[in-house]
Length: 181
Image (cartoon, helix red, strand yellow):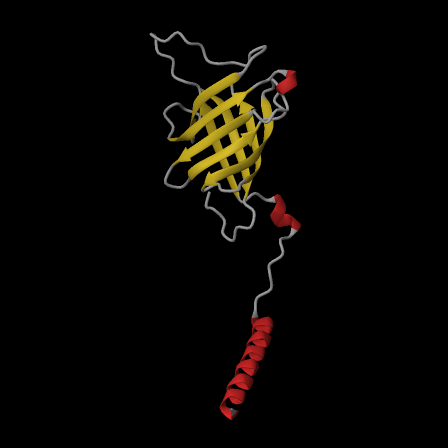
């Protein structure tokens, strides 16, 4: 009976000592400063290429229609030239009609397949207007871009072979490491 009491008192004493030591020597959680929140963790600059139109295919490049849906499937490249390295695809479905301009259907899906990045981003196009520059919201992603939030700036480039220049500024919640980029 005495041995049980000794084991019990020893176990309680060790437990109390461990709790005290853990509370004293545990690192404090790092608080994010306002400077860290304003700086994106990943910044990417990409180009959406105009599709190649062969002489047998008389299809015109898609433009913003007066009514109806704007559906596109384009190539994402690192540079503005058609010969630049392909990093993924840009696909979208946008209804620029006033009644649907704030619709959840207006999504641009950017998929990536490179050694550095594998996954996708979803960009919500709620305030699409027929302008040369649009600031849209990144609402999530998969793979390397899981849970991404941020800003996607689409700028029309008539001076380049690429249709649009895309600048992505992304943040990842609760992630201890920064994705290289």
